[in-house]
Amino acid sequence: MFTSDDGKITCFKYRAENGFGGTNREWAAFSPAGGQNEGPALKIICRDKGMKNVTDVAVPLIKLLT
Image (cartoon, rainbow, N blue to C red; front, side, top):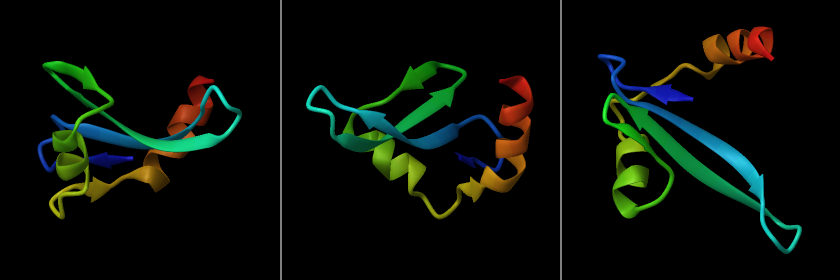
């Protein structure tokens, strides 16, 4: 999970099962304007060096919610 400095953009890298039983790795991004999980701009934004890795903080919080 990655977030921008101002916290307005959040990106997740996740694994999803496709229709053939294989696993795909995908990105999803969320901002005040909405969410997106496809398109070339998404990967550019999520891989930006300005994005902060917050996985270590986010995973325990997500587990509390599930």
